[in-house]
Length: 555
Image 1 (cartoon, rainbow, N blue to C red):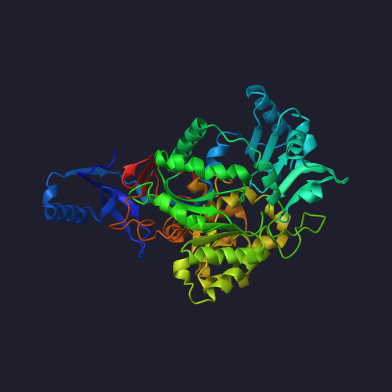
Image 2: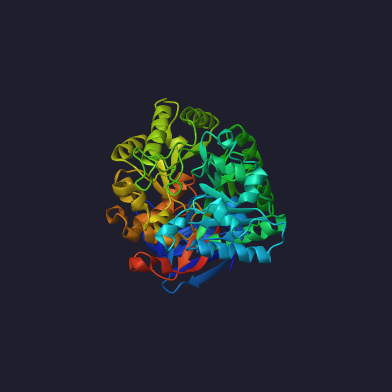
């Protein structure tokens, strides 16, 4: 059932969690075209519908459809503030390694791919997490020699779960020209080309150095990309997601290297063909913010209803826990070399690019994970906001991930009004190994309770394809946290807010979405169970009956 121009649809006999300022619970909602016409009691909605028709004499032929939802629960459409649509689509055409639990598993999957794929085709696997391998002795990222054991005659690239580490075989090393003699010369300022004890490259690249590999990845044919894009959109709709914050690479700067330069080109075609159902607010990885002005003009012409918008600039601060590159004050507990991570961008460059983007009228969002990394980014924001021409209510400076936060950072962030975008599904991936890596610092890692108690606006995201985009996995992680630092858990109502109204605010769209109110867009999800009263460990089993986007069923 889709809304049409002459039909008003009244949903009733349901529990509607509005997420408005009063946190009202209602039992009826009327929709006309792509907007909410009325919300409240069934009697009130019917009265408003009658008044609406009487005031619009040219709409006397309007149809009224009544839908009895038989006690179903309705929530606003979910908003994922940070995901990578280009990589999400690209990885759907490659090997998914998320279920690998040993090096022998990995080799078996690679060998199977070799048999099934043409000899000229690269073998590219993503989402490998070595920290959850069954045998502790195997919990290391595969090296060149280990990959060579199963494939030494064609390029093989293995990408870690978080995208901050890439491993390759000898064929790729030769292709990109990395040798013992030039490894130091080739290593970028903000990354590593790791070597063995003899100084020979072992096939592992981190952070900025991963671009040396990603630059060479083959671009999929457009038909495959198009099919995968449709699959992505359907998948997002199945999770109740109606709006996304999309991270897009414009050039060689970013996780996909020069291959990422094609990301926006391919997505432009997809957006023109209306393959993707969700709304998108795009954030671009670039060192040239002026490009965003031209892109904004182009994006504004893609649709006549502002489904796609340019949000602003995405920058990187530090690395990740998984790669031991998130910037910490003290060394990692499981590193013998005293590694404590590092910044992947110069602080002065971050500050200058942020100011330039703000002066052009764009929002800036910056990746920060480690306690020292977050401190540096908050200090940069503090310096910028000390200039009264920058109003944070308009700028909406945002920290992406905001994983490890000291009390001092929380206080300063609250005073400055900094927005934080977290990834609850990181807890699901890291709960069983992170403490061994950071020790007692886990007490202030993913501190959702502390963030909310500090009156900081917390929004949610998946970082897909790094994590699953499944919102219900994230909601359950917010409430139960897999037992990891349980004092930082939040209520289900708070968890819903970070995926709805708070997320809308983080994208600058709280006036049109994020809550179910008269005049807002008809983005909502019909659930088979009451999400507010269900046993917490059953949240992830809630099923979606329908997802509505702008009044249209997309799932």
